[in-house]
Image (tube, rainbow, N blue to C red; front, side, top):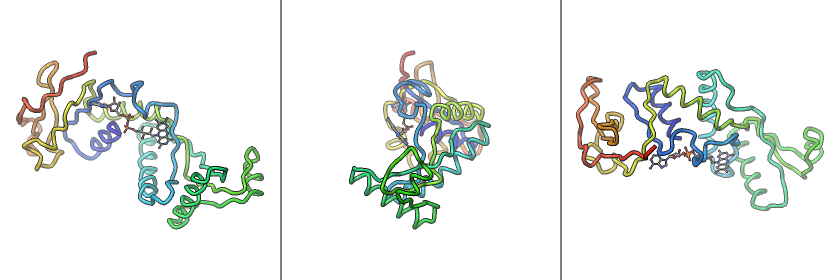
Length: 215
Ligand SMILES: Cc1cc2nc3c(=O)[nH]c(=O)nc-3n(C[C@H](O)[C@H](O)[C@H](O)COP(=O)(O)OP(=O)(O)OC[C@H]3O[C@@H](n4cnc5c(N)ncnc54)[C@H](O)[C@@H]3O)c2cc1C
């Protein structure tokens, strides 16, 4: 999420951006570093998530285009009725949401499921043509190389407090602020003048210190 945010800002803004991750990008502890993740429009009654997924599909396609790599395998997603009542309720709500938003979900009866997906048996289900398999680690590395290409500084470092919430510059546009390394192990919040890219004034290095995680 942090990497995607840095990438997105670097696409639209020429602010200096520093991205800190305490264990580095694609580390063994983060939840986004894995072979794949399911991409789906189906979020039950949560239409807001469905709308966000629709928006994010465009962003995934843009990222594929810019990186020249296939990151989202457009397999579609088959949601089948089973014995779990909660899961069945979620599937039915998802189908209703996708239908209401005219997102091309196809309701399937047992016979059609057997016909089109002979490896499965179910009384009913639905097919979301926009679902897919996201190649998660590959996407992380694609994002990492693009953000660096866009000038984002990516460093190992640990944020110990949220600076913008209680900092004197909190009323300013957050894009005017950046974090800068003042010595080998200190990071400080600086105010970046929108008028001049070189005019950087340290606002409050004492409260804005961010100790790095040792290598
Ligand atoms: C087993 C599993 C299966 C999943 N399946 C799916 C799925 O199929 N489809 C789906 O959409 N979602 C799925 N999810 C959820 C999805 O993976 C997560 O929502 C997503 O990866 C979260 O990304 P993130 O960037 O917020 O967090 P992360 O990828 O965990 O990244 C957080 C980063 O912040 C760094 N960090 C933490 N604290 C600090 C600090 N103080 N200073 C500096 N850096 C710090 C960490 O080192 C880490 O690299 C699944 C999750 C799991 C665990």
